Length: 329
Image (cartoon, rainbow, N blue to C red; front, side, top):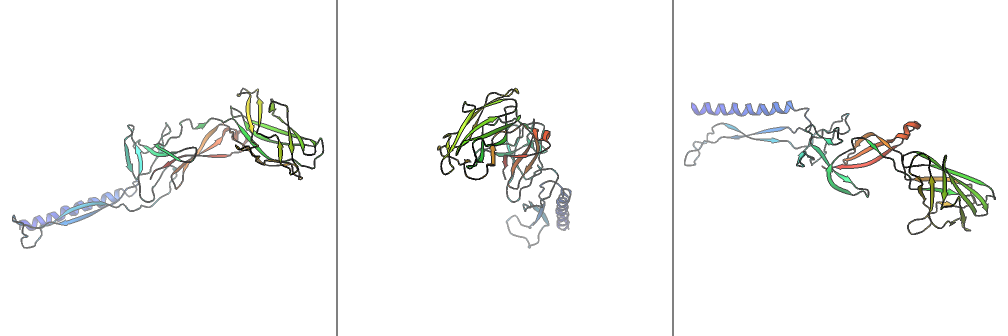
């Protein structure tokens, strides 16, 4: 009688624990990255002191193990761009203040007031910093500066793809311009004026509003083409000395990129028998910017979208994407 009662009670206890596991699964149905558990049971055998099985009748059941299900869960869309999920194997790496790493599948992250991407426990998400050459650097905290702004970058070089009409007559003028930036991030209109002096011969003058510009320490730079319309003069990159009066760093030296590092003509300025025209412009400066948005792509690349402060003044926005850190998984 005692054995039968014990066997029945063991079944009640085991099933009570199983019900607790089911209740836990139901309670965590909306818990981020929760992995449901399954219960396993084992028979309790009846044995004698000598090790033999007495009559082959068991003595009930016990909870054998609680096994988490590591299968891929369902990915859901949220309104927070830093809510992340790992599709497949892997863990997020998060560090505490002492630098101790922890691993988690829960991808609920937000930026704190210091600019670190953290989980609800305050642990900092780790990622690989992308270097300027595109290679991955060391594992570090994912961090966006707290001020959420970027300083301006003064223009150091520019280029034009320009054709100057070989059929032009002496005195004919062609002008082209593009925007460059000073050390304060002010947009400056750089104007180039090309004046034909003879067949295949031109002079180029540069100017800006409210300032002066010298090309290779001269007011004007001669430009010459050979019989094939290829540039022969100048034979090296030209340097523009821009004198500013707006409080920015002055003089600002900007290189007109005409030749590569091997001294070979890039072919950007030509003298063919077709109408003078500018087909492409490039310069490497930009105004200061403010953070507009942050996104994470399916490869774990954190991308910061910045908008130039000048764009607000001109009512025309241009987004600049800057690669940040890749997530580990």
